[in-house]
Image 1 (cartoon, one colour):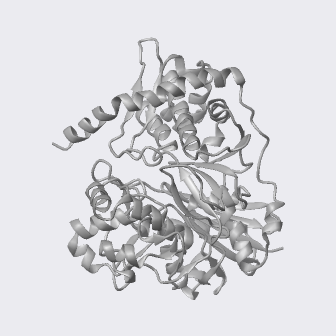
Image 2: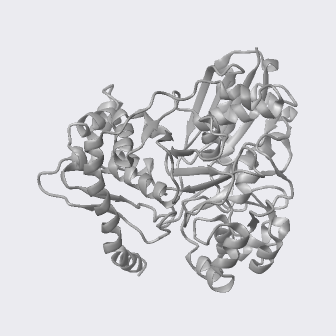
Image 3: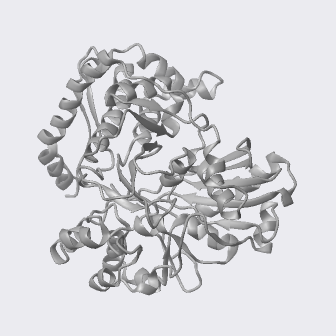
Amino acid sequence: MFYLLGTDIGTSGTKTILMDTEGNLIAQDLQEYDVLTPRPLWAEQWPDVWLEAAKVSIKNTVKKANVPAEKIRGIATSGLYGGSGIPLDENMEPVRPCMIWMDRRAEEETKWVLDTIGEEKLLDITHNGADPYYGFTKILWMKNNEPENWNKTKLFLPPNDYVIYKLTGNIAIDYSSAGNIGGIFNMNNRTWSKEMMDAMGIPMSMMPEKIVESTDIVGGLTKEAASELGLSEGMPVIASGIDCGAANIGLGVSESGIYAAAIGTSMCAALISDKPIKGKNLIVWPYLYDAQRLSYYFAGGATAGAIVKWFRQTMCQFEVEAEKNGGENAYDVLNKQAATIPVGSEGLIVLPYFMGERSPIWDSDAKGTMVGLTLAHTKAHIYRAFLEAVAFSLRDAMEATGENLGESIIIAGGVTKSKLWRQIFADVTGYSVVCPIHDVEANMGDVMLAGIGTGLLSYEDVKKWQVLDQKIMPDPQNHEKYNEYYRVYKSVYQHLKQDMKTLSRLSKI
C-alpha cells in the first residue's frame, strides 16, 4: 500500500490530507489564518503565512498518519486564486503582501485597460474581460501606485507555486493559475500574450517561463524540506492549480458538460466545456485536467460562506460564547432555528455583495443589503435569508452560462455540512443537488492529481472512488415560491445599483 498527500492553501486556512491509493482518508490537519484588509475592498496576505501553514499542516498530517515516510509517494498543492501573484525580488523574497482575488482596488487600472486596449481585443485573445478581480489589473495597480515595489519585483508567483518553489527550489506555474491572471494570457494557444503584455508595459520576465499541466511533477522535496516535514528527500511535488478547479477534480469532474459549484469563503460555480459557451460575463481559464482542451467557465459570489461567517461573528456572540463553554456548535444552533422559518424568510431579501461582486454582475460598488425587515423578524429569519442569498447568487451564476445544465448539479464546500442549506440550494435552483461524502474536495483533487502525476493512479482508477453522496431533490412547491423571491432579489440590485455607487463615493470623501 502506498500513500499520497494533498495540500490546499485556502483564503482562510490550509488543509492537508493523506490518503491511500485506494481512496481511503487516513489523516488530515487544518491551519487557519486571517485576511488583511487595510482599507475597504482591499484584501491581501503575506505569503509566508501560507508557507508556514502548509508546512505545519503537512508535518502534522504525516505525524497523525503514522505511516513510513518511504510509503508516501507524492504531494500536490493547490491554492486560492492569488490575484496579482506574490511579487518576489531577485532573491525570491516577497516585496509586499499578495493582493488576493477578493481585492477590488484596481478600478482606475480597469478603466484604463478598457479605454486603451478595449474589451473586444481582450475577449478575442484572453477570453476574459477587465475587472479589479483579475490579477493583471492588480499588477498594473502596483506598477502605478508603488513604483519602489515595482522596481524591486522580478517575478510574480501564485501562492501554491510559491510554496512548491520553497519545497523544491523549482519555479513553474500551471495552466489554470496562468489563465486566471486574465488579460495577459492567450487562451487560444495557452501561453503568455506578448502583445497584451507589451501593451500594458508588463515585462514577460515577470511571469514564470515554465507553464505545466496540473499533473506534472515540478520537482522533488529538497533535503531540508523533507527533514522538516518528515518525508523522503526527492519525493515528487505535483503542480495542481487553482483550488476551485482542484475541488472539481476531487468531485470526479473530468468531462465536458458537468456543472459544479465549490462554495467556501467565496463561490466558484463552473461549467466544464471543451468548446466555447454562449454565456456572458464569465471568467475562463484552462481546466486542471486536459488543460489544452478543456476550459473552466465560471461565475460566482465574491462572498458566500464569508457572509455567514460574518453574521456568526458579528451577530451571534451568545451562540459563539455558549459553544466556547462546551455548548452546541453555533452554526448548528442557527441552522436549527432557521429551519423553523418559512421559505423566503417571511419577506426578507439579502444581497450578498459584501466585497463588491465579480461575475456575473461585475460591480465593485455592489453592497451587502437587507430588504424587507420588520419588527416581526428575528435573528433566525435573518440567518435563513443569508443562506438563501447565497443560493440566489448560485442561481444567478448558473443562468449566466446560457446553457442547459441537465437535471443535477454538484455542490461542494463547507456549506454542504448544513442539511438545511443543501435543501435550500435545491429548492432555489430547481435542480437536484449532489454533494461529496467528505469535506475535502480540493484536497481530494490534489491527491488524485498526485497519484496520476506519479503514475500510481490513472483517471480510470480515481473515477471508481466513491466521492459523491445521494441526490437531494428540490421541493416543487418551495421552488415555485423561491421563483418569486428570486425575481425580487434580481430587481432589488437593479433598483439600488446607482445608490450603491453613491455610497461608495461618499465613503471615500
